Amino acid sequence: MMANLLDFDLDGLAVFCERLGEKRYRAVQLFRWIHQKGASSFDDMSDLAKSLREKLKVCAHVKALDVISQHISSDGTIKWLFDVGGGDAVEAVFIPEDDRGTLCISSQAGCAVGCRFCSTGHQGFSRNLRTGEIVAQLWFAEHFLRKHLHRDDRVISNVVMMGMGEPLQNYSELVPALRVMLDDHGYGLSRRRVTVSTSGVVPMMDRLAQDCPVALAVSLHAPNDTLRDNLVPLNRKYPIAELMDACNRYLAHAPRDFITFEYCMLDGVNDQAEHARELVSLVRQHSSGGVWCKFNLIPFNPFPESGLIRSSPEQVQAFARILSEAGIVTTIRKTRGDDIDAACGQLAGDVKDRTGVSDRIVRQRTFMLKPVATINKEVKET
Image (cartoon, rainbow, N blue to C red):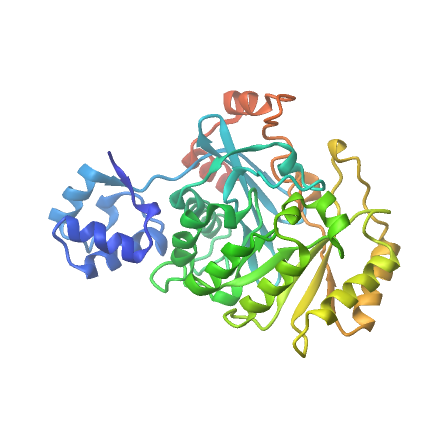
């Protein structure tokens, strides 16, 4: 069976090369060709010994994901739908800013958590992505964007594991992918600029703190267990008090001195003044002194199955004001990519409903599937 070299972090690739009778420095060379230069053909890797290139052709490949569709928003946001086989697809989104370029990556096909406000969760769960399928989203996006934007330097400065799926429920495949992102021979991203978002898988938060501490974002969305049980079913297993304790433990290892709490603003559900005051009490109760968290308020992106409504801008501002006046750093997320359904919570809303309501991915795969090279060419020509 051919090994996909995107599945390996540098240590894993070194072990693979040793099995071929090669030294570690060959793995470093190979790793750089793949991730820094975007090479997928061994013939292009000119400083590798010809004998090694011939070995690799027999037992390995750099297997990217096929692109089913690509949409570019009027604000510059780009959304890709990637084919991961078996009728499954995942999405990644690039969000350009003046001072950074952020890529939102998926870790699972579907999601098993089932948060009420997330369209991906309403599609059900199919499977975990392999390390190479997680890395392939970054590999494709980075090298596509360099061509698309006519740049030689790195385009993606930040990665957020906030796409489809709960990253910490795919822990064994996630951590090697994070190491590829952080490796100076790979993408060289700062730990502060790689963020894992979790709905609160407490044991895996503790493991991540030890194995590969990166920035952490926690999908909180409610100030008490009664409400959070309804919005985030995982809370029934790991209630808020346990989650807060885990956040404080993580801070001892985190590259940032705060945890980000994501809070989706739902009209009449969790957006009232009393909810904001409860959050203030919650934060103070679990504070060991100083500012240890910040809140990112997220305008809800409606979809019919949710039965929920977006909070008004005035209500969001009033909610933010209560938190800010209590000394809690609070931001309101700017919605991006609305016109291509790339905003937070919308990923895979039109991909596949595993409850049997829709077979839209079948039609997409039939009519929209194009090889990566074709999409590269089409976008470059436009």
